[in-house]
Image (cartoon, rainbow, N blue to C red; front, top):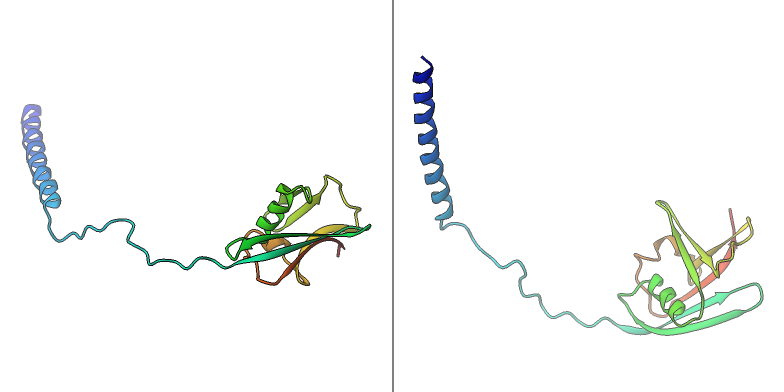
Length: 147
């Protein structure tokens, strides 16, 4: 009885093996599959607009101005990085899931104040990595009262 079962298992195995070979061969020889390159030629992109970006650094003592030429694809974070690389201001970012905090010159501000980045008069600290620079906008880094 056991040898009879082994004999049938061997026959079924050989049939499945032959069937699998024909199936794979048939799939590989199909002609209706369209093959395209992964990267198609993209139309020529227009160069991004380059403009002068301005950062005001407001402290309790004075106001300093930093200007640099950046393009429209840059973000306010890139403007701050340019200011840091130029030695204009030293800052660190503390990124949380719901907010970004700025620490300037490794000095923790008093409990009722915090550093914010403004675009004209609008706070953009939490969007500083995703938002693009605006032509003619003035970015201001200053301390504001905590709400």
